[in-house]
Length: 297
Image (tube, rainbow, N blue to C red; front, side):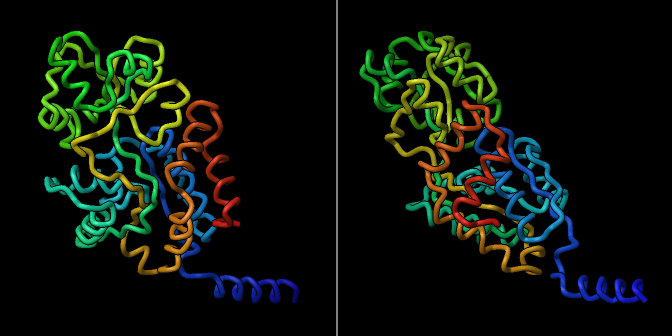
């Protein structure tokens, strides 16, 4: 009798569960600190929604993440609007506002069966960095100022870039043409993102490519040079999912909409600093922030 009652209760329990609760949802991310934080936020939110989450944070670079999402190996990850516009869709025009960039990539990806959820206010655009003391010494505040200095002696300064930035259409090739940056090719070295900050701090690099929301810029007394020709597009993050998953559960967009109200440049910079510099666990940092703002239970 007890077994029969238990069986009935289990049937009722599973019948009451939402259709997606038994589904697996794989979350991926790129490999740098901010993506680890965002990726773990995606993992925590999807678990809170009741999904069986396959945590694939981190998974790899931009191309790997995009292919994994397109082929349904993962069902969601945080991507940046500027990356989608310039790398995925090869868009050469400039957009007047961050909203316009977001609208473009959202509409374009809808045709690919992918849905962009709420646009986060954080704008993790690329930046060129120098030690603040060196920039002050040479009177450099902008990338145009740097270009003028480099023109006098193309071999005087060493630039560190990520392997991805070296070939991206919105990376070094565009930087060279937009600013007529005549840096000696032998003075351009490829490094992993985290090593660039350390190399700048320790003096083995003079210039480095970085991310504007990285807390190490302030911690290491670096200066992000002004992009005075507005070369870099807006890089607002958004959680991108397969459309069929969102269609089954439209309510999954709600916690990401809440996140978009609180995760601005200042907030993500602090979280990035905790992970990259203080060596805090990205999952713990992400979950603490989400609980603080009542985004997850």
